[in-house]
Amino acid sequence: MKYISTRGGVAPQAFSDVLLMGLAPDGGLMMPEHYPQISQIELGNWRNLSYHNLAFEIISLFADDIPVEDLHDLLKRTYRAETFATPEITPVRTLSDGIKIQALSNGPTLAFKDMAMQFLGNAFEYVLAKKNQKINILGATSGDTGSAAEYALRGKKGINVFMLSPKGRMSAFQRAQMYSLQDENIVNIAVEGSFDDCQDLVKAVQNDAPFKQQYAISTVNSINWGRIVAQVVYYFYGYFRATEHNGEQVSFCVPSGNFGNICAGHVAKQMGLPIQRLMVATNENDVLDQFFRSGEYRPRTTANTYITSSPSMDISKASNFERFVFDLLGRDAEAVRGLWGQLTSAQGFDLSNKLPQIREEYGFVSGKSLHADRLATIRAVYEQDGELLDPHTADGVKVARALREAGETVVCLETALAAKFEETIAEAVGQVNVPRPQGLADLESRPQTVRDIACDADEVKKIIREKVY
Ligand SMILES: *Cc1c(COP(=O)(O)O)cnc(C)c1O
Image (tube, rainbow, N blue to C red; front, top):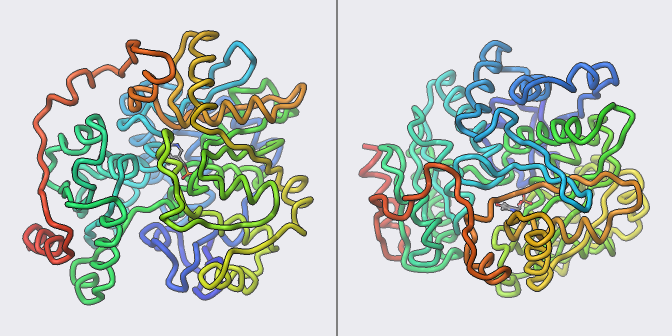
């Protein structure tokens, strides 16, 4: 399997090379040359596999330059009950109204990003050792992505992590989650400024090409192909748990921001998994809902991006969306280049002529959920089922309830646990005891280590220099 860029300007690459890549050198995103097709027989054979064995069957189709024994060992180490709280890794349950919930948020940071990031951590370590390389990951986080990356990369050989976060702007839980890590290869840096300032510092350091090269600066962002491929696995697993035989179809409803999670659902459907519809759920930042309803894609400016109570979906543009458009346009890289050229210069683009294909062939529909919907959904599920949904998952359940048709099986992906968002839970249902996974009761009282800096790229470089030499 080789990988190509959505913009057409990169020679075909192997999986291990794509794994360490962020954006492709031509500004596009890397994609497999084709999607492996899963036969009915394979689907039947996979139904009762354990999570890590299923992951092996799927990922080995994409990562065919890693010897099978090594990949199997790596996946067995990654998807363990000790890391994801249950032997099923992503169990599926059913609410009283028949909507199914697939738990993707039982990993170390209680959000679905662990599903892919834990794989990436082990895969990076493996590939770097093979290539005899070291890297320094530099990132900016407003909370979720940074902590998932740190928990996945802590203690890994050949990798240091420098994570910038906006000083005083994360919740006490998020701060404690990151800053309590005491691993020698994890460096938390609190910046005097906003999340955007942190991102600007990362860009400034990366734009210093000699520095970037000398210190092998790399990132782990949501456009990494390794993350998408790891996420494909739970769509198969969820399908098997939600059905009794392979003649049935399932729809997935996905709380979406950067389109990374649901992009993996799109890949699973293209591989032949019997997915009926892919429901995109957005919050107030509804660029994707707008697209799937009208065919018009109009990214927002940062200033027009709302801060909401489902913060991990607060995006101005959906970074993985280009992957779907590439497929939608029959993999015409020149057309993709044209559209994204239009994005930087003008208002966006209009693919309304493709709406029938988007709905019928690709199965995409969408809906949005606002603050009041989110609270009402958390309250209703609490009253009917006695369980607390996290605000992002509540957006998904709201949209699933609105879009579900008679006889349709809908699996909502649970992207975080309520324990991370106690304030919004209290707003929805009053002061209740929000259950926390075992071992996290004392999280906020653990010792924290963080370097405070001014909003200055030179200070970031200084910390990297001190650490690496
Ligand atoms: C990142 C995240 C999302 C959005 O996922 P995308 O892949 O960006 O679409 C939704 N919910 C939670 C809790 C997240 O952390």
